[in-house]
Length: 340
Image (cartoon, rainbow, N blue to C red; front, side, top):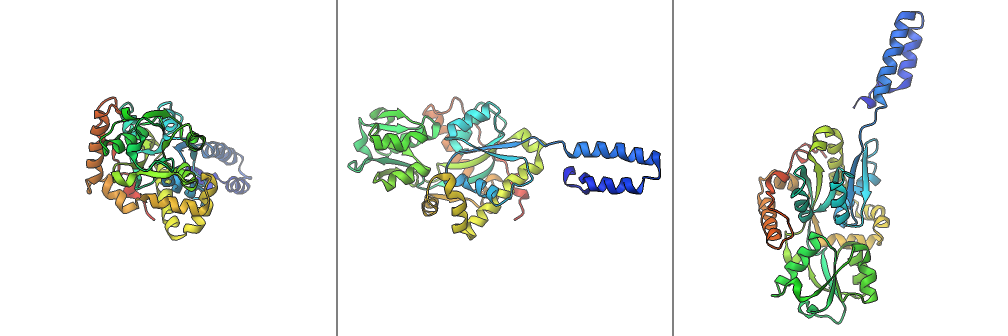
């Protein structure tokens, strides 16, 4: 970018002016040109605002920031309490991208055709759970009981799929709408007998004695977390979006090679200990660069098939306002260019 060029250094122009001080005409011309160039150097690139909530799979973005991979870029990570707020912020134009679950990406794509999935962050493999009071031994025992569920497609999807496996439906329980920040308090207070939760709330409630009644390993491959960007941002800020994606894979590599230091950097933001954070990673599978290139490039069609199946399931359960073709969403332009 121009602002990183030597001509954007004020000392460059001072030296040039000293050399040209004996020629008034040339000096004035150089001064004018210098003013124009320096003005263009200071022109700020629009911020690239990326929303994320506290989920272990998104923490590689924050690790990339901690490690300085996003220094000297307009990348700004914006915290949200849940994917619901991220979806709303995206629709309102408050962010240009987000780390969200695949079902939320489908919900967004049903009204925003500019959504592009540029990174498959992880597969949830036990990280999303239904936790019950210690005395509740089975999912069927929730019949008629209050269950806290975040008012998102993901929350509805998990509880629907879990109950389906037991021959039940959401009508068999009392659904209490709860934001993720309310899960721990409501459970401990006794407002609900069970809760559909994840992340720090999952870790803290398990430590407090909650019993796992269901987890996402029982619906393998159905809960996928992704990084989305607007199509026009990919076209207008190619270097910045490439830096965003490359930083994520560099951070994932650092996490794999230096787990203790990475966890120490991440844990304070998530509200758990370093050990608890590393333990939470066991509930998901983070996808590397090669896996992303295959899935987003569709040379491995498994993700496309899974998302197509999910889209139809959400439509059948009225979790989508209309059918969405997932094929155009999968965009491998950025992962193809990543060099680690």
